[in-house]
Length: 338
Image 1 (cartoon, rainbow, N blue to C red):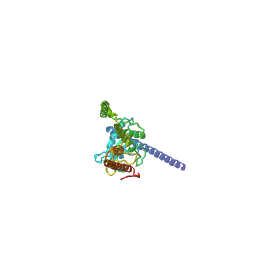
Image 2 (cartoon, rainbow, N blue to C red):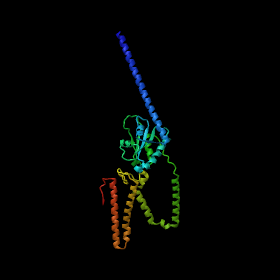
Image 3 (tube, rainbow, N blue to C red):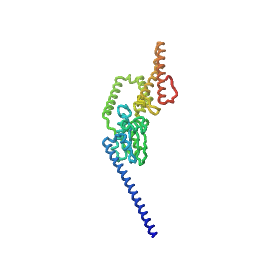
Image 4 (tube, one colour):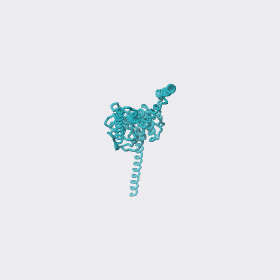
C-alpha cells in the first residue's frame, strides 16, 4: 500500500512538472511571438510614414519615445533641430535639405526595415531636448538596433565641426555605423550649369579682349602682384578650409547674440574667415605703404604724418588680430592694445 502511494505521488509530481514546463514554454513562445508581432506592426507603420514623406518621419515627444521603445531590431537616425523662424537657427536651415537628401536614399535600399530617419523639432519635443541635455541645434544622433531593455538607449553623435554640413559625409557616417549603402543623389541643377557655362564663356571672351586690346594691362606687374596678394589672403585666412568643410556662416551663441568666432583652433565660421582676411589685407597694405609709397612723399611733414597714421593703423589691426586669437583660445597669453 505504501509503495502504491509513493508511486501515485511521484506520478502526480512528474505530471505537474511537465505541465508547468509545457505552460512556461508556451508562454515564452507566445510572448516572443507577441513581441515580434508588435515590432513588425511598428516597422510597418514607420515604413508607411517614411514612404509618404520621402524617408523623413516627423516626430514629437510621444512619437520619439515610441520609435525608440526597446527591444527593437531597427536603427534610428534622428535630427534634433530648431527650424521654426523664431529661433533664427541658420545652421538648422542649412542642414535640413542635406539631411532630407540623405533620408531620401532610404527608398533605394533593399531592406527598408533596417533603418529609419526622423526629425524632432524643438517646439514639438522640448522634453526630449531636456532629457538628452541638448543645448544647441542642430544635433544628430544615431541609435543602433538593440534587444536591450535599458531605459536609456545608447547612441552615437555626429560631429558637425569635424565632418561639416554636407550630405555626402553624413551619408558615409551613417553607412559606416549601419553597414548599409545609402547613396546621395543630388538633382541636376540646370541653373548652376547654365551659370557655369555663361561664366566660362564670359571669362574666355574677356581674356581674348584683354589680350588683343589690353596687352599692357595683362603684362603689368602691378596687376599680377594684386592678384597674387588676393590669392594669398584667401588661402591664409581659411577660405580653402571653408570650401572643404562647409561650415556655417555664423551661429547664435547661447545667450542669443550673433556669434561669428568659433571656439577652438579646429573650427571656424564663414564670417570669421572674411574678417581675418580683411585684417591681413590691411596689415599687408600698411607694410607695403610704409616701404614703397611713403618714401616717395616729398614733403617731410606729410611723410611724417603718413608714417604716424599707418603705424597707428597697423598697431590697431594687429591688436584686433591678437584679440581674435584669444577669443578662439582664452589661454592665448599675448595682447597689444586690447
